Length: 609
Image 1 (tube, rainbow, N blue to C red):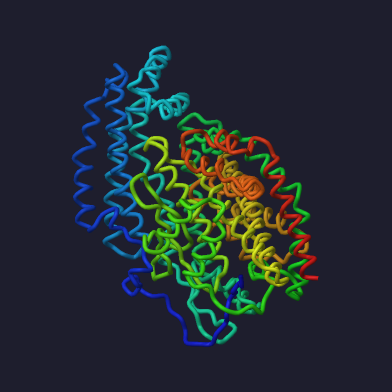
Image 2: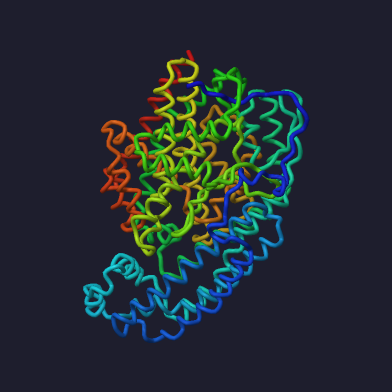
């Protein structure tokens, strides 16, 4: 199967279309959520009218099994409505962050959810207050058979659940203390303008959050350099605002951890998934112990690309060039579907329909659209995918495989679990997504004997492991360091962020790498840093995925893996992965993924020599 990389064709300046100019077939179909805006408004009114009913249970939640069941079922029905309202509102803003109607809709829902949270705030404390003996008796009652798992999960939160009045205050303050994320999104996706960059063929193209990755994969070093410096010049112009937003994000994390009696923000973040802090620390220790293969890879890249010195903007272009052409959307879908054949007909048929006629995916960039990619599904909706697909960026084929992994994880969990047990944690989500990327690489390697194509694919996997295992672990170190700084009472200023990030760059890129001063600002522009202790799950996820993909490919049996997808959130993630055959409580999976990186670097060096 031939692979097609970036084609640099001369032509007029390419501008990003308005949302109204995008073909409907290239957008997601949100009518399964709400056929019209008026239908959303009607459901919004039902939520407004329905949520106060919970107040009638105040002081009575634990009086008997029947009452507890009624509370749980009412809460469930409202949560399902909230999921659907929130998904529609969020996806509409994603389409165009400058759409005032969509922004107003989202803001109204956010304000209402604060009131809902306040009204429901007594439920958890009252469940926690049920005496232990009575609680065990409740769990043994057949009426609560569908609620045993969520009740046990809730009960372990008892040491970190406050009084009803305190929980009410936390619920009231949630919107105010989490506003930094919205500020960051509006600033970086709407207000910031990066100008134009002339590509190697002389055509001027708009530099955006989304097109930045395309420019970094251009073969002409001058294009990559110009895109990098123009991009970060805009961030430098807003660096104090960004630093302030990140500082407040960290402060919010620390505030909630302390309010809920966790020893630290990181322990508070890991507690809900029952992930020991040793998993986080073992990840960092394992990666730091194997940095030499990474330095070796940078040296190979510098030599092959003929660079006098290697910069960050030189680390994304493929080392294998002179292969022209594009991969259109349908070609990307075909590659992904073929690669996932070991997962069986149900998986393939469902995904193929969703990506084509089912219109799960919003495919291309438009003005105001959120950058990057994500999958977003709820219990009753299609598992939608947001992309900014570009046919000249082959890594976008991998992004499609990645997000399809999330969506199919949701699809299987929806159909196998009750609403209260279907929602899987992010720790597991990143396993399903990177698993698909590994199968895509193995499939493409099996279907070509061409030396250059194999070199490209191995280069791609090495870069994926570098970006997901090494880079995300560096990010995880940064998050740990900045939260520790706040917890120690030291000042989190722009200079502090830059100093901490610079030290990590020097460690992870090595002594022979040219670090541009602007790169110190990268720590301010990563969206996941505004969500607290998320990024380490990418690194643990790819480590588990390497192990699971190996099992499926070696045995030809995807049963355990598909059961993993079906399990949703019915168990804690470490236990779920153990049942699938991977023990993340030990360093072994991370070490095995690092060994794969080192082995692939050796293979790549041999092919390029």
